[in-house]
Amino acid sequence: MELKTARLTLLIDPAKKAAFERLCASQDVTPSQVVRRLIRDYLAAHAVRFVPSGAEDDEPARGRKAPARRPRAAASKGRSSGGPR
Image 1 (cartoon, one colour):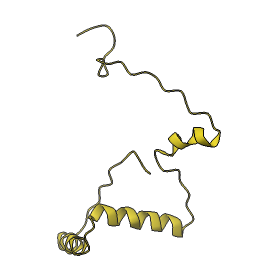
Image 2 (cartoon, rainbow, N blue to C red):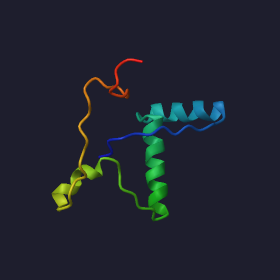
Image 3 (cartoon, rainbow, N blue to C red):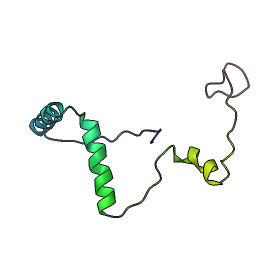
Image 4 (cartoon, rainbow, N blue to C red):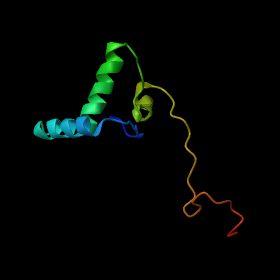
């Protein structure tokens, strides 16, 4: 299962968007679900392979070594350790 997400922004005719959203609602699916399915099908139709995000977590079970993870500082929030500026 994919764990990470990225945003895809696209421009579309407002009337087409409204019609798409109505159709999705009538089929009890979200527009995002339909777009993700379209992208998966398009990639498969063109034989494009990819490793879904989150698949790295399954690697140790297949005998591969997982990459080392750095411990996160509890209160750093991206600041250097020199204190407040």
